Amino acid sequence: MQIIHDYIPVTRAKNELLNLMRKLQDSDDIIAITKNGVPGAVLISMNKFKGLLETLDILSDEKAMKSIRKSIQEANDGKWIGFNEVFNQ
Image 1 (cartoon, rainbow, N blue to C red):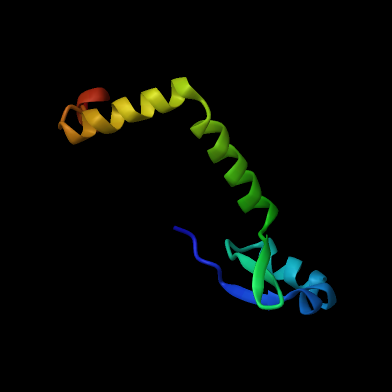
Image 2 (image 1 turned 60 degrees about the vertical axis):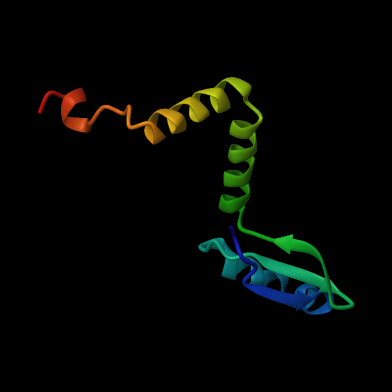
C-alpha cells in the first residue's frame, strides 16, 4: 500500500505549487494537501496518475481479471511451467 510522504496546508501548497510539482515529477511520492489539518486532496506525478488509471482499466476488465485470478490459482497449485520448459533450454 502506498503511503503519503508529506502533509502540507493548502496555503503552503498554493505558494509552493511549482516546487511541489518539480519534487513529484521524478518520484512516486504522494503529498496530501490539508485544510484545517484535514487531508482534502492529494498531489501525485503524472506518471503515477497514468499508472493508477491503467490499474483501474485492468481491474474493471472482467476478462483480464478472470485470467489473472486463474493464473494466481494455477501458481498457488504449482501448475506453472518453468522458463526452461517453455523455451527448451
